[in-house]
Length: 415
Image 1: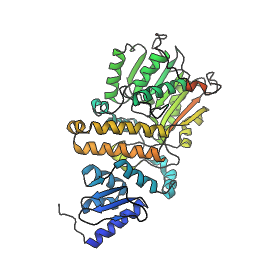
Image 2 (image 1 turned 60 degrees about the vertical axis):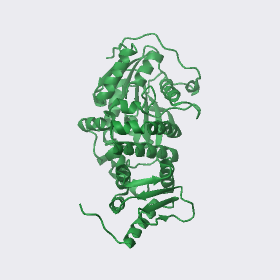
Image 3 (image 1 turned 180 degrees about the horizontal axis):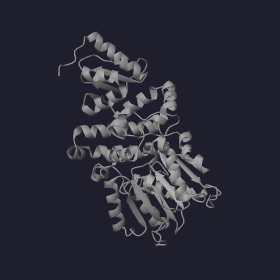
Image 4 (image 1 turned 135 degrees about the vertical axis):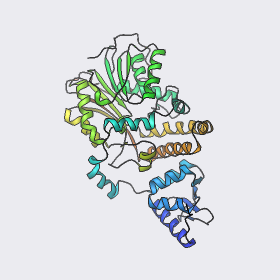
């Protein structure tokens, strides 16, 4: 392949176009071998070095994918802290969705649907990586969703346990009840609900790696009779239960499937049950980053609260509580990224340097997105019209004392 050759004046024009796209961010841009450019009025917090003209041209043709792939391939280096550089760029972007988000709101229903086959492929792409990869940087319970930090000094392990308690208390779980969980990861929440709240759980997941790990944990913990891990699509859930919970799955469902998810929830809990949806969302409709969809989460879409209501409204579910844990997710990602960096050498040996750079950029960019408010983390608690377990106040959510392990009080049989 012949090298891309341009004049120095054209090099400068391309750098100016890139700087204009970034906005007034205090960032210095350098095409290797040139003097570079920076926005006036503020000292640069970091320098982005572009190794070659081909990388710069890719960025100008497709900024999102070009920047992500350029960093992953080593065509872009950041002189300074990566998170600081990304945050400076994020904060320079205009607020709101602009005309692009208006266009998205009109065509969103026609976005590529997550059929059962496509959903399985999407899950395999991300979650069926080697489990020991995730063990390098997640907490000891292997919880790959936003933690809950009662104080900023809370450890990641403590915060993930606090998150699971928080979810269980929101659901008002009682010994002997039955729960369906859609999208169970490596099984931590299902096992936590059974162990500490005395319920029986059917947990569904498309990831083979995660299901195998979760079943092994259930056997080791003596909970196999109370927790059943099922490798299947949420659309095939047919069990009746007292409560329905989904933590970190809605982002992978897709707008076109919300009616079907609503039907599944209603067939599970009917008019007398209750449920909780925990998901990454947005303040306004907009697609996820093209680079994230291509390299990390194919088929993913973070909905707005209004869009999420399309799941609940047709079935007359009452929204009992909405909480935004955005800053908690930023703190979670700080822990994940720090652990990831400490394991980067081992991860390079497990995979390769490009893989590590892809995941470093994904974690750093996600941290910034939650820190500045581009992404939100919503928890919605809802109930059927005949539900009798709607709390009078929110006082039960803030109990300091952790629950004690419960003796078996139910057999894992659901209709």
